[in-house]
Amino acid sequence: MVLSSSLVTIALALCSALGSNAAPPTAKPTTAVGKLPALGWNDWNADGCSISEAKVVAAANAFVSRGLKAAGYQYVNVDDCWALKNRDSSGRITPDPAKFPNGIASVATQVHNLGLKMGIYSDAGTNTCAGYPGSLGHEDVDAATFAGWGIDYLKYDNCNVPSNWTDAASPPGGNWYNSNSAIRYRQMTAALDKQSRPIQFNLCIWGQANVWTWGSQVGHSWRMTGDASATWSFILMAINTNSQHLSSVNFYSHNDMDMMEIGNGALTTQEQRTHFAAWAFLKSPILLGTDLAKLTAAQIAIITNAELLAFSQDPNIGVPAKPFTNAGSPSTSTPEYFAGKSSKGTHVFVINTGGSTSTRTVNFSSVPGLGSGTFTVHDMWTGKDIGKFTNSYKFSLASHDTAAFRLT
Ligand code: GAL
Image 1 (tube, protein in one colour):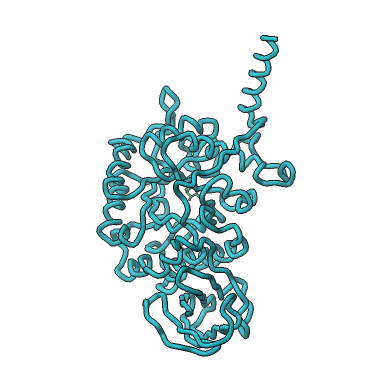
Image 2 (cartoon, rainbow, N blue to C red; image 1 turned 120 degrees about the vertical axis):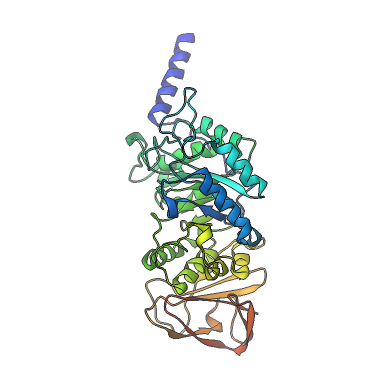
């Protein structure tokens, strides 16, 4: 009897080491945080692996000095490459002392002292994408380490997945929540759940394993695509991909369109406006991805636009704007007309995906929940009423720009 029960224990331990967990955890993400899309910053898009305490603390200070904290930006997030390549003798991930000479907890304290929150990065595989320790099989110790340091947000990546953890073509019962991918993430949800500190959980799973169908049972947000680039084609692709899965978005449940590229590359002002507006009206996390000190006043004006941020952060309405068919407009490969509600009324967003300035007409009877009649058209970019219009509103829109209106 004693012998057979220890055999069972050994068999279970083996199964778990091999990845075929008998009873994968079903803990749900905390609701103490993560109701609204995260607003913040992450170093990766600007700096890649060259991260340091100095850069993180500079970003946190820039949140205050450049008005980002006042606008609602909160999370100061460290991405890959912050650790040493090997765990310490007790199995804990160790910050690289060349990059973080005072450790991560000290940086978190500095960030918290500014009234901000601190995020970190790990991976649901053996190693991160850049080859630093991953958390698969180390979930409990890593979650406890992060919580002990005062971490508020975890981005959890998807590189270096062992072959015994890859997904079958179809998951058990056809439910992707039971796929190996989901279980790798569920193990971290359960580990985070055991901590006394609530930690917002982002699944960096690049739109794999139908994550939009189960993401909200496991985390607060999930990446929908591969990595962002500072290009118009990426912005269009992200809008297009997300537009197909907007029924997954609500409070505590956000498709992540990836980190912002405003300030990087050569996006036009209009493209930057579309990048920010779409991330706001589709209720994606908005994590700035550039050296905040170098943002121009015009860029700061875009990313602190109070009305678009209010739409993103509406405490009463969790659903995003959705595409609609505007009578008289040609169909386009990426939707151009979106509408949604906020606490303040009905909003319409129009993207010019074409290569030249052109005239657009919003037909009020096409807008879900509006109907024909006379409405005051308010420009969310300028914060000013444009005027009263009956049945439609006609305007000129520059190539790659987005117009943002409230209709009341
Ligand atoms: C990718 C991820 C990026 C960044 C990078 C770090 O998988 O999508 O956002 O975190 O890894 O190595």
